[in-house]
Length: 402
Image (cartoon, rainbow, N blue to C red; front, side, top):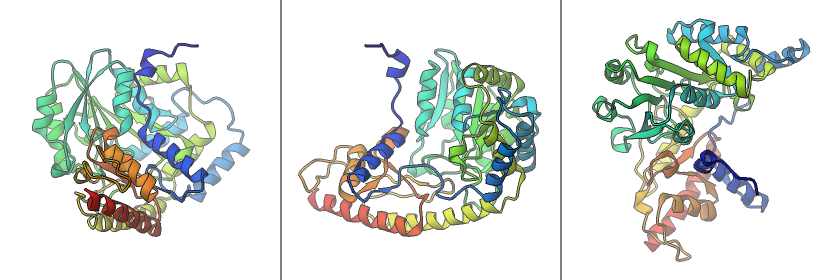
């Protein structure tokens, strides 16, 4: 039997992928499962982007691209960052990779040494902790629950920083909570970080364009005091419904970009040549698609929040971005299912909802938040209504037997 490395054995399986697999297994048995566990837009990639990919095929973009991506793709990223975020980079500071997830992991591996501390506000996306573990860093968490709209304060951040701190990961808007830091809130955090020039910040801005604040979402990189400490990670997956195209990018101080390019050159090389050309079209082309999708998600946000508030025991905030609801459901922990099984955790509750209501959600514990669950509302209005009806009905049985 071949030995598996300790680093892989220590790594947790992605909870979102695990729930997707369980849902698929039930569906294969003929069960009508509503999936609210997957974080991807339910829209199709815009036609003009698909046409650009077809053109790239016809023009024989079928060879290896440079390790950090085509110069033309990196130039398109530079134009986007200057136009939309007021951030000035050269193409040498950009690395294009196989999705924002790869660029996040690349940045962590390029910055973190064994034993270095990495601050992660909780709740947080499932993969941050595992990426830090892969780099042999030490995770330091800061808790921010629903009572503070899932956003950390400057005093919390200052308290968490030690001489061993090397990196802070900040996701805005947030997966799994949908919370959005305002410019003023980011500036207050930046004031703390600027006092520690040895600390880097990863700004995970992938949900930037899915927001309901009536304006733009700001990046902490926009604050001049921490610009040279910040690594911006973004991509085309969410804003242009291009999850399967696998194009993300990183913008960073030159030494970080060079390190990431060296790392990427050794284990994946450059991303898909055709997908890069599609991404260029998305970044430089008409942007009406983003607005259409944003309006649809805002309508769905309003719908799911109103329905969630009708479920007894749920504590619900009003997310300002992304497409997730993250209710606190600890009122159901300790209740008893109709078959006599006790609900002992939020994980038990999500499995009960899958088996009883046939709705797939994700346990909040996977995001560092036991007692919560995550629902993705990247689906149509009727499906949201039916899913919430099923959840309320199944939860009512638990309350009755508690």
